Image: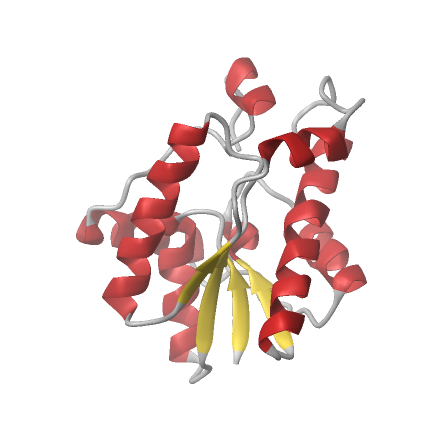
Length: 175
């Protein structure tokens, strides 16, 4: 069993498809206190629930703790995209994923964050590796991102235009 950290339904769509195609069992974990505002968090969670239902897989989710996330990245607010703030954000969510995997007795984790062409998959996998039992899926390989766009259309999934944090949203930066 793999506990798959899921940032949003579109990124999860092709990632889940790939894990299932590899004949692996998977459960999803939505842990994204970086998302702002809370209405956006709830919208992304709703579509993630829709995705989990479509695939018939279990979805777990954290409570929304945006203030705790802000404390974690304090002093990094002005960092550029792909800078130290993003690395700390990845670490925050992946630490939560490892804790959830421990709680559930799941040995392996992976993350859908690696599907984005705007994110450094090697960095994400390295960060996750520091926190536990990462399966090194680089979901953008094998046309993963393109497939996520196709599946998002087929499944009528909401596709956002920023990573989720208010600092990315304010700059209008790609995620």
